[in-house]
Length: 284
Image (cartoon, rainbow, N blue to C red):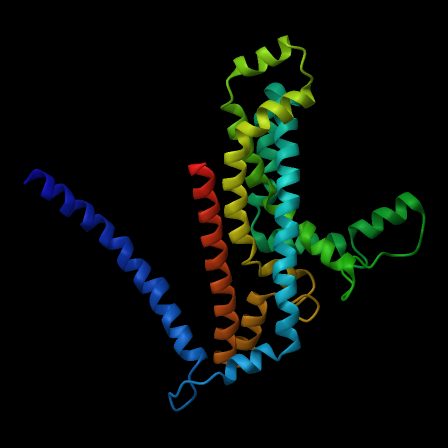
């Protein structure tokens, strides 16, 4: 009887999040599918999908929606691990202070951060002003000039820098859990700092790093505000901004749902592959 009561309590507690998931995830997804593939008379049609997939703006957004997250997450991984190792080996007691400083880009509201970065990188912004004062050249660099690889690189850099502190904190927390005896034994054997970092610490922090990157990879595909604020939809479209454009400016709800569903199923596929990879790694 007691076991049955426990089972009922477990099912009751699970019913609330399951109901919320059904109401706020499954039902809107089903409504989006119905809206995207039915016409005004309620008949099923592929016309909205053909219209969206034939739009050059949407096709451009597909490439950017994959390019920006992949490069951004790679930069976050490299910068986050490098900064975590620097904090761990080089800062000592000052680690807590610098850890707080490193969180500032993430702690600042996103729109404030992006507008600040736009002031830095625009044609007459702070960066070009600094280059003029240092180098004396009157030529300005078009950091955000539409259609240039430099513009894409700046958007990726701005996006990566804001969330690098998350990777830094997760990796640093994993480093701080490594027993000191491991490091002492390596030092006694004559291992250098580089050897300790690569051969001892890296395998130990790899699970935490993979979790951080998996979470960031899924989140990075939802990029919206960064390219929109820095350069606008026409210069650098992504799936989220294109869906917003269809809904708010083109007033085409069916097209907006097609773009949103493309992103949603991409995220579902990415999440499934990530979970499968983590499960296989855990079993091996």
